[in-house]
Image (cartoon, rainbow, N blue to C red):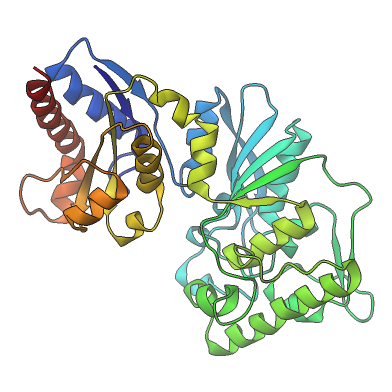
Length: 375
């Protein structure tokens, strides 16, 4: 039998690689000779860069960049084995997790460090960038990222502005750099918000980054103003494109300043890992994540995996810590079997160290059942 193991991480307990190892252990206990294809996955967010880098036979690199408040930090990015493709998560340089709660202020934060990572990868020889833009601490419309690549943002007096959220409303001129990196960019973007408006970057996401009502109003005006200047001076009107509001407007910035393409993170990961090619002759796809809930049903990683397998009539089994959807929902998604790895109710403190054993045991029982049915 051939098993394709394609789980996401179990957040807080197991990486996707560790989930694969536990699944493999469970399978080998029942069918030692089984063919097992290990394909750790991600949804375009945290850990995506590492997984895609290792999948491409590459390795992780570090660079000194600015954090969201301009402090010098070391951030990771990946390069493929041939050095042509770079895998970058903006959160490693411009993420909310880099700030203490009392430091969160999207008027002051910037995506400058994310731009530095892009520049560093380009200077190392990468011509294609895959950029994940989840988990940002910023609402700067991407001008920080652009500033790191040489774009200038000037006020009414021709003075250069610091590339952060509070500068957006003051921009009167945008000056492109003389030379831009020769790169193509794909953005892993699961947020469909426009740049501004009631469903946009400021109103929906800025409060999570420390903005009060007055800050939200100021940022909203700033994002509107940025879009107006871009339309006035460059005849580019993209502010209402789905995804431009992602990461505090970095989606907009990537589209305009980098001529990027916005794509669902899951689609990028599945394309980069050549997921569909691994389905050939597969008897069972085994996936999973820490929690299967409403978000899973709305098109995250497991939904993408199940959809691809369903087209080939390959059954999909899913393991998780918490199973919070109905059997009917799972069937609609294309999942044949799903179960929690926990044998009894447990506190989070108990469940985290048990996760490896739970994945292994749950896989063992599933494969044993499947093996009996096959016989």
